Length: 471
Image (cartoon, rainbow, N blue to C red; front, side, top):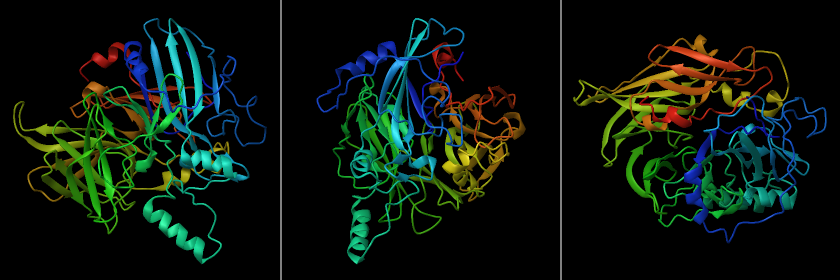
């Protein structure tokens, strides 16, 4: 079966609201949500020819800006949807890369757009809506980007006064974007937020109409401008990392469900340089939080216990990753003490080339060249006995998944525990981007893949009875 919206978002985060779970979110205050008239229902396009002018370099909608800020309609379904699939799937990612006469160069720069697919009794309806961040609204009003994005800054300063304003804006965070284009997640109390790696990008949204409700107001006094793009969230807590630009380190913070106050539960000082590294994601076990330091030198990992006591700080082989998959404790026996922490990630052989591969002109080129950098399921073993060095190796032969792996997910019930299956996007080569859905069996060290020519799949999400399985 296939059901596609007029856009296919690129940032890797989504979640599923079951029918009974979504009722909880209806109690949200919608007083500040902006409202627009809904478009009339239409069939969703699977190709972009009817949506954008020709000559854009690709006939897929994945890397093309969506001109409609808001859309809702029925989705054409090939085959049959299972009748037990009832609920709402939300995902977040870049949807607009051009404003006025200005265009972004990198896929991570695009302004956030929420996508919703609702499943009811074998039918599917879709919707998308622009996240109305300060970054997007100011760019729309000025006809050009105003705030600093992932890889692109506003125009060069014209004089000394402009330079001083830029410095002050960066120090205070006023010029840093609030473009929440990385993650959409539901907190334990039902509130739904979009966010990216700037703290002020945490934005409340309404999952029912996708409206922007305003910036999430933390009630604590933590002043960090940066955060992990992928927090760890469950029904009881919200965990994230805050790079500390003043004291050069990383704060581990926790926010209880129902609260808006983050509390510091630990800290790690930088080992790889004078400034914190890019903290896109991290992982946790049942007892530990793993803090990876990756200043694109990617040379060290640190470990914290949730009491704030550092229990291990080890150097590991050079590595490059966007996304950590899972972590768990390796024990001496069934009831023994933990001897090491196992940490899995989508690893690019210590090569940051993937960042350049995500330049828009490369993704839109439509080339048949095999330009996707190789990646693997990399496994770190971090000893807890005081050994100063950790290990990094491949879990399975990368050829099993086409020598490409990212956009990963696991059964949520296995978070922080030993597990067996990874659900991710893999590669069918030659390709310039991930183009398969892949299920990896870590026990058998094998992979099963789905591929359709011309498709750019989103990250897989486990739903239904499969979530109740132990691995």
